[in-house]
Image 1 (cartoon, rainbow, N blue to C red):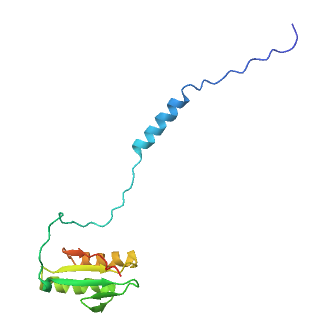
Image 2: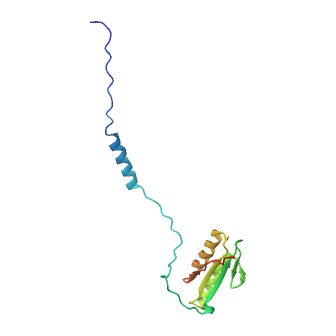
Image 3: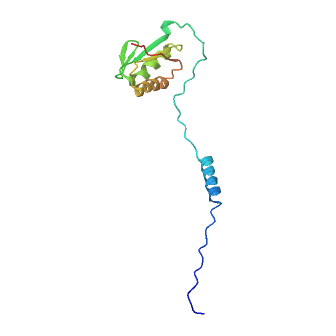
Length: 134
């Protein structure tokens, strides 16, 4: 009985449950993964249609041009000085409203810096005005 050695047939791996395992892994990672959400700017917006007549003395206009220069009540002001000036104005008049107007080409970072300075000065009344169309 010496002869050729018999070759054993290759056994196949049962792959019928592979799709189930892949699906379970997919569901597991979808459920356990946390998605970080951007915070954004926290502003409380008034309800639609609430328009009040405001005394002009209670409004401070802040204009930001496309080069990042700021005018605060028609006085040139550096962005890092807004906090101090706004704090002084708030302490003298708690009803003060800061109205921010930007040029249509204003850098978004400059706009956010101005908003941050006002928030640090504890300004609670901020108006975001539409830029004038030229």
